Length: 361
Image 1 (cartoon, one colour):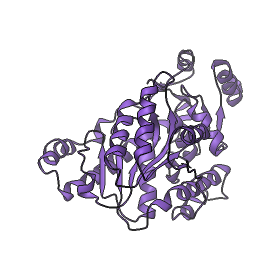
Image 2 (image 1 turned 90 degrees about the horizontal axis):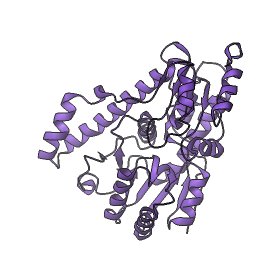
Image 3 (image 1 turned 90 degrees about the vertical axis):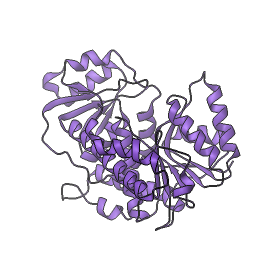
Image 4 (image 1 turned 180 degrees about the vertical axis):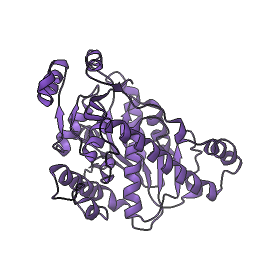
């Protein structure tokens, strides 16, 4: 099986992101962001010529701010590199097996994230459908963390079969265990690539903190450490990403549920959908930034709380999810200098005590 690694390459965004967000000399976090933008461009730019048509599939139409951060980071790159929006976009629910109608040539990029495998089945089944139907097209899976449950060999075998039958599928991954897994299990090129969210180098905290400690903890199937929640509730506000109903306007709902099915080949509606997805993703990202800005110090087990805090230059403590997603990511790409990694309640208490020794508990 062929394997590859993404190499550094110039990016149109690097010059803008290379300077300090505070106007002085670049900080370690600034330099780390610049390096990640370089590495992302090195991994992705070769798949798409400037000005060429392309499709971006699997818009994250759900409350997870992290997936919207990835999507907006992908947009930042494609806007700068391709110089044009995608010719075709879709979510799980808006896909109609119609990519070729709007984008008859050019690569198909599948939105990245941390849902490749057996944990988030709907997204995996969507990928399977794309890989199977579009064997005549170049398909690139944007950077993913890969995890298959030990008891779910059936899903893994189906993924292996479909990838093996596709003549031009490339897999981008965010961490070394994922790279090694894909290299071992799948018959396709595999490329190391950092998360697209790094491309949002210009993020800033919109307001002064309201609380000394803000905790953002998973409530979904990837959560661990149930004993940590009661403790953190004694230290300050605890939250998780919440649905942002205003991200989708009433007109958005009418267009997608009524007009789009009635006019399935309308390029004007596809252009509107692309702009709508762009607006909705940024709405959710801005909500996430405002939420994280409430804490002087953030504690979280979400990867994109770590990445957004780094972009905002905010100190934070990272726990982890069920399979070590954050630890794996930092091991692959290094630290922004703002994160303290802990595992378990007692190390968390020690980290908080070190961060604010006057109120250690």
